[in-house]
Image (cartoon, rainbow, N blue to C red):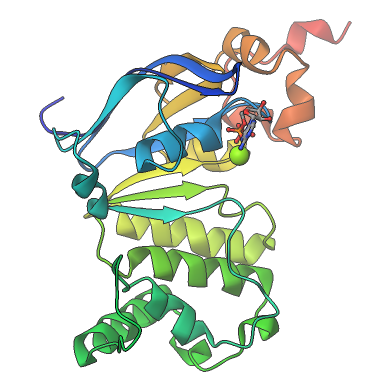
Length: 257
Ligand code: ADP
Ligand code: MG
């Protein structure tokens, strides 16, 4: 890999005595579009948080563009699985996205600059939500809300975008728009996408990692039945929502006796 954006070396994270992920080794190259799938509780969110420095790493190292230092994390943009934005808080979409421009340790008299506002306007245009800028967030659809969170993550112009199940609760057309957007962003940004959506994984990402406490698979976004079984330990149809053939080689035709 010529220029790794993120190097995860033998990383384990424990919550108390319980391991969430153990011995994860994974490099993410500059410009890559990596999908991460796995069962609920498989440690996907934990792995992203370990990269972001949001949970302490029990052992191993994470390097971002070759550096271990905390400061290097400013190149990471993050769309969390469970957002800390209260949908009922009286605030506009534009204001939420602007908060993405805040740096740590700001003073009480902090004001956003003209360049903050211009940067945010550009991002809203790019994501196609400029017309919603002054909308109260309580009046956004699920898809619009999610696009707002992506815009907020982009506000600092990160080099790497990490998204944790960004399409989990949005309608089909918003899902499609989000995937199109990620495809576009990937032209000049590294993307790590955690998803339960196998269809998206197969048609969107360039590489795939499967996580079930350990890294079960890392490679082409095409899965054998064997990997899926060791990953989920359940029949593939349960997890593939009727579209298993897109990702599964040799899906058990022979089993329909
Ligand atoms: P996934 O995102 O793949 O569903 P998580 O990373 O959220 O998995 O969780 C991995 C494991 O760690 C699960 O067993 C979960 O219950 C546990 N876990 C996650 N967050 C915490 C926490 N803050 N405290 C204790 N256990 C946690
Ligand atoms: Mg999760």
